[in-house]
Image (tube, rainbow, N blue to C red; front, side, top):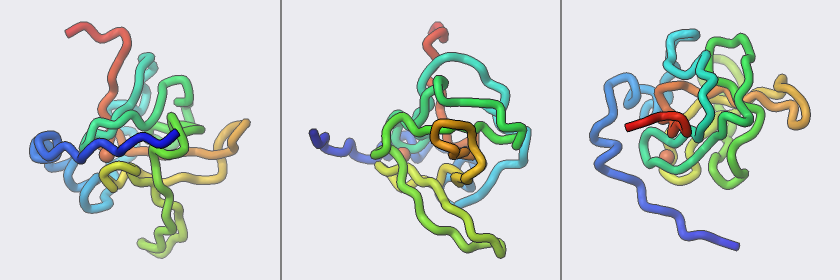
Length: 135
Ligand code: FE
């Protein structure tokens, strides 16, 4: 079953902080252990900070020791796109939001079973929708 993609949310994008903009729109990387969600253990869904679609679940988050939030699976296959990135003298697989093309991070083949993948994602690209949060 195909769902129509929601439009990118211009209001959200306009309200990005400089750090969120540098990372999501210019392919930047936050310093390791600096992001808000590195050690976050709250239950919930991590949304794209730029367009709001649900990208990752806390169910698939694990402590990789890398200094960035790490997931072994996206919420669904059609939430992210992966492309070859040869910048900075490395060959890496870049992870972007499928909906709005925001840069999220990279995926590496050294994650836990069953996927063996580590989606290494910048906190600044994410917005946690916590189940336990009270507004
Ligand atoms: Fe997005």
